[in-house]
Length: 300
Image (cartoon, rainbow, N blue to C red):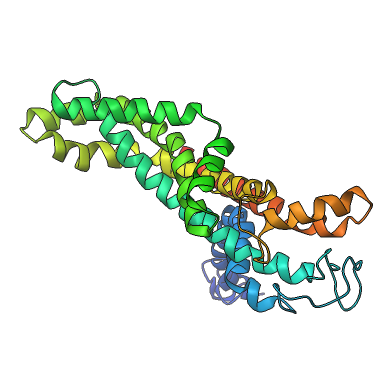
């Protein structure tokens, strides 16, 4: 009986399983990355609805299209409100207005907060004109933050009018101190680090140190907090609309939809208020998922 030598492994190398094995780690890695970025999917849906919402609306959001206060039917899936507006169309259309305002508020508040917080943290304890300006800015953001956000927004909108630009600027002004104080705290911590001291000893100017070393190393928590500011902006924008000083009807905005649906809900007509509340809650929840994702990535 003749036996094949043990060193002959050509049969094993031709096994179909030997070629599939290397692909397993790649598939596992791809699945792992998908799971890692899964918390961003809800927010991506919010952005998609902000872009496509008005196009997905089955009917006009600003015209009477049915009998007032009709419950959900096949013609009007979310029903109609007391004015005869289609609630589904208005809810989808409102995504664009509310989300765009929230994005503008977040960008303005974050950029202004980084600038003011950097000056207040870097120069606030020094003498001279620049130190006085920086200290004044620091006290100003403390004063503005001491004022309730809704009251500040109400005052500004009452003076300058009810339109999307004024509302975005007003909300950016009253939420900016959250970012400014956070940035000031991080700058105060970062400016005493060893690499900043080394840069100062090498002869770099204070402005160069601030722009090149301090801000890049201090702004990460502020950027992380931006998604929380986004959620706050959505809530406060809708709050102004609910109080009657936000975007006026017939423009589709969740706040004025809630204000119009509140009286209906009191008499048992639940649908005019329910669906904008769900859209608002989902958007805020999606923003909170982004905050959690960014925090986890930063810690890792």
